[in-house]
Length: 87
Image (cartoon, rainbow, N blue to C red; front, side, top):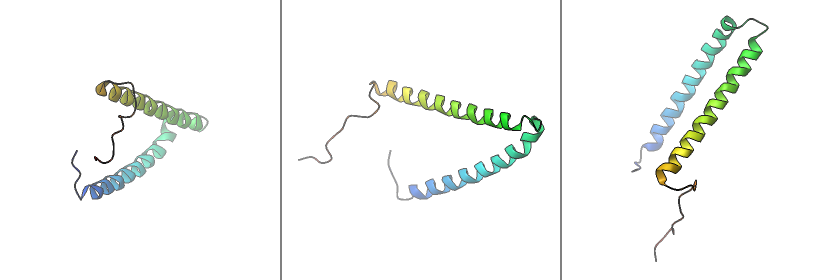
C-alpha cells in the first residue's frame, strides 16, 4: 500500500464522520428502547443488547485474525522480523 501525504486528513474526516454517526445512532437507540421493552425490562434489554454486540465484535475479531493467518500461511500472528537497514 502506498501512503500519500493526505492520508491523515482522510483518516481524520472518517473519524469525525464515524463519531457523528455513533452519536446519531445512540439517539435513535435511546428513543426506541422504551417502545421495545416495558419500564421493568429496559435495563435487561439494554444490557443484553450490549452483551450481544460485544460477543459479535469478539467473534468478528476471531474470524478476521484466523483469516489473516490462513492467508499468510502460518500460525504466527506477526510477520517475521526483517532488519531495519541493509549493510
